Image (cartoon, rainbow, N blue to C red; front, side, top):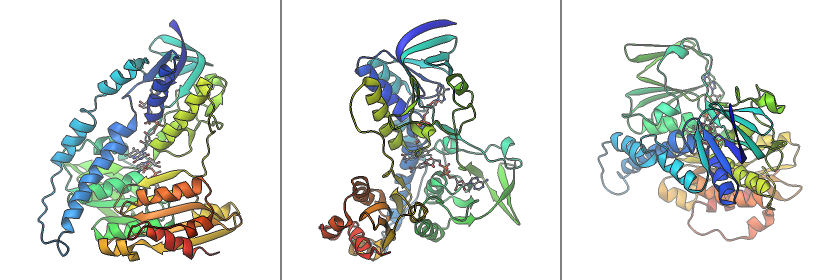
Length: 451
Ligand SMILES: Cc1cc2nc3c(=O)[nH]c(=O)nc-3n(C[C@H](O)[C@H](O)[C@H](O)COP(=O)(O)OP(=O)(O)OC[C@H]3O[C@@H](n4cnc5c(N)ncnc54)[C@H](O)[C@@H]3O)c2cc1C
Ligand SMILES: NC(=O)c1ccc[n+]([C@@H]2O[C@H](COP(=O)([O-])OP(=O)(O)OC[C@H]3O[C@@H](n4cnc5c(N)ncnc54)[C@H](O)[C@@H]3O)[C@@H](O)[C@H]2O)c1
């Protein structure tokens, strides 16, 4: 085993790790970045970007279908090939990260492709070399798709998000196990290309962590688009023969050409050597303080911190860890205004607490609703959606908000500012909302706030 001393080792180069390694190297530190798969992690190759390209294309198909009755007549012939070609050629360069590796190395980072393992404080082993990190080690190992323990599933050629984004054609039929963000986005993308989609969700509703009103609104749209959504179900058995999946769900049997398992993620923590730095090897997440410190000379960022599995969280924490390592001042991590958007149509965007979380926290809760479809802009666009606001009446500020609608994630941005900066509700009441925007539905919801 050879040894090499450096300043920092970044284990896992997801979005946050890649940015962190780059920043530290540009800050003059000697940095080794290790990844066993692709530099950039899940988001650019198998997650956010390809899935949003699928949804963008699906949105164009849906928009074209809305021409009738509004702007003449359009005949739409959806074809998945350009979607696949753009993902393969433009987004992922055929799932090759050479451009990202070059960028990293140009910034001064030493890149090592391999499986990294902690072997003690400030020590990381990769393929027979131990890197000893003078300043410390940053973990950004992310997650991988997890498969629920369903009888028969393991032996079948089911898809996870990683195979789904590589699809060369839209299958004739698709069963999706899991109605979370991945399941919902993929279900709508394929359905709009003609795939007969069935979503099987164990919980009582799709997008379970969202406000119930948001789940119901999306379920209604899915039903109108011909997507079958079965909630509160238990998938008993899966089998595959003659190029077809058979999925047994209680009394029902569903057949499909493809099966997508989108039932949650498993953190890449087991086998990482956490026990060598005093942490539990079987941990579901790594505890961090508000500077992303997980121990002496140890930082963790991204999905594995359990603060929200989003690229923007990985990047946010990356910047905080970088400042801490470089000895720079800056705000500590705060999680009272974490935004997230599910990019279905309508988009479901939310920030901060849900009503249930605010009530469980014992706040003096006020709720405000508005029907985005009834706003002038919503009516013009024939849109469906809603705004739901959660206020803490004692402090006179919003603590949470949900927007469902066209560009729901963009409308959300003003509410992210309000929750983040604790803008007084009185200020939101007295400001001017441009006419006729979708965000005027926020004004109606602010007026509606009541205990
Ligand atoms: C289908 C899909 C759609 C998504 N859409 C969105 C979206 O629209 N918006 C959003 O904000 N988020 C989205 N996400 C979530 C987003 O992809 C993740 O939150 C994001 O990738 C951040 O993850 P991360 O930085 O923790 O690490 P990851 O991206 O998971 O990267 C971790 C890296 O660590 C490497 N690694 C792991 N263990 C080791 C080891 N022992 N040695 C060396 N390397 C190792 C892995 O190979 C990987 O490259 C989506 C996810 C999926 C699956
Ligand atoms: N737009 C975005 O920001 C975006 C998009 C996709 C993913 N993500 C991130 O990735 C994470 C993982 O996404 P995900 O959708 O895989 O996970 P998830 O945890 O959000 O949803 C998984 C769903 O599967 C259900 N489920 C679990 N086991 C089941 C079973 N045996 N049968 C039926 N249903 C079952 C769960 O009840 C849950 O609703 C998300 O939490 C999110 O943070 C973000």
